[in-house]
Image (cartoon, rainbow, N blue to C red; front, side, top):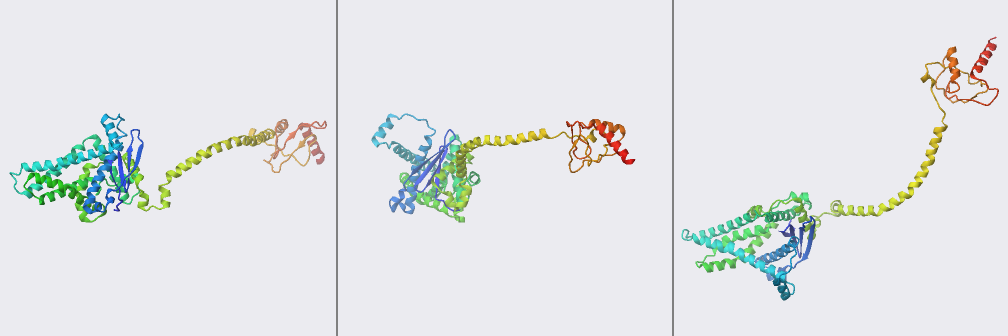
Length: 454
């Protein structure tokens, strides 16, 4: 697993991520939106080479993390705490400190927290171990019992506060912070789906750091032994920075190494994180992703090239660009369409008129054979009929069989209305005075045939 170098912590309804000299606080606001604030910070260990020494830098890093953590909590709380008027004490403090009252209050809060932690996790276990000193006389065994009491108090404390609803949500955001870091360090793209599938335990977690401090304190307090209770307490307080420095170096090494020994030694801290981290929902993961992206370029870290970035990272930009183009082009298209619409209608009107004219000019065509079961006689089309104008087409539609006298009379009556004998024979009435009716034409035709036979 590749070390990204970023770290963070959970805040009220949000996640803080730190990378180098800047950190970002992403908070889910009451209206559902995500607010992100980015701030610059200075690494105090770079002020002098002494502060960069292995054991010293651990203490400096611990104090610096507490300071940034308190500032991040203050940023997150302003979205959920109603604005209140400054008290007289706060106004007076800001006047004296020239507007730095909040920083002083945060510093005092950190000092109070450290003192309270020393009382709970150092003085109380020491006093409890003194109660069984009459029963257990071995000082090494007493030191071991004192360390076990200290660890049990810490576990009980975490377990009890995890029952509180707000702390439970804080632990869920803690899980989102771990999952985001684990996702990119395992070589996966920072998406909600990939983050959800990542581990919520991490070897560089502050929970592991504190537990390592307590485990190392057992070893140190067993070795350094004095009979005076007051002196014993002083020595324990003086050894805390040393133990914290060693714990910091081991935690830093664990984040970079995948050796079996380091993984085995990191197991207690990972098990402890099952209490301090909970499975986050997708909305919490989105907050964690926003916080990471504000201070860390995970695409560059994963070595994603430009083509892959276009496929994955620039889809939203392309979509927004396309939407902007559509919004710009849409009014122009509408105007062009409005202007073009009358022209299209003018083009269509002549076509429709021609179709209408064609429908009107087309003569009525009826297939008589479908109306009556009759046979139509053949007529010699080469001989023109007197008083009749006959029009022909190329192919006949049917052959006219022989008919009886009665059927001929019916056909003669229908000649005025319908076409017959062949393709499309149209009969038209003319003003010619020499024109004859179909019956007269038939009689003349029969007379001509009789003359030919004679």
